[in-house]
Length: 289
Ligand code: PAF
Image: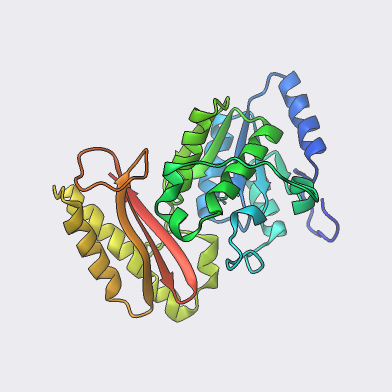
């Protein structure tokens, strides 16, 4: 348990790559399967659902808690990103996690680091446009976590739908020997998608943020009722967001579920995805059809 942490936790929390490797080696020697839930901490119900699935499907479960500097742009919220390891450790222990890997940036990247995992096409759309270094940072850190933990299965939320598509593609393209499982979006009682960034919202902004789910539910309903013209669906979703004075649209798009390229007609698996600033906080939401 890191210095300064007061609560009694039986579950192991380690900060070094060597300790993770030693533990996984021991499990492997016993023939046990290993699941990994990569996170940036400040765990909420969405993470809980990933952890529960991982615990149900694997003999041992590792949760990584690492706010990865490489996936934040220079003007993004790296410094203010919420952190609470005690809360995370408690939640993990209660949910049957076996090991938390909580490395420092130095442990992960040393003082010199020159190797990246990058991706074309899928990362050039949606969040990739406003966050140009983001997916390179995600692909690189996730590859490192896969190499460190060597899990049989890893779990990611459908809320970050483009991230999930990118990671599935990376694993396929680069023959990484594990299974990627996507888990459904978990919402607050009023429909706001759970996100660690929801904590940034003032009371007024929290109410305004419901415009994301109104737009998503509206688009989803149109598709369910048989609308296939993306222009019409996007126009309705956009108009819904524009009703909210505190909201500023980053994007509202419908893309092919595998390639993340925009489509005009819903004639295959699609992702409808939105990114909206509520004040200074950038929130995302989506549905798949
Ligand atoms: O989804 C996240 O929390 C992060 O992007 C991930 C996958 C843990 C990589 O840092």
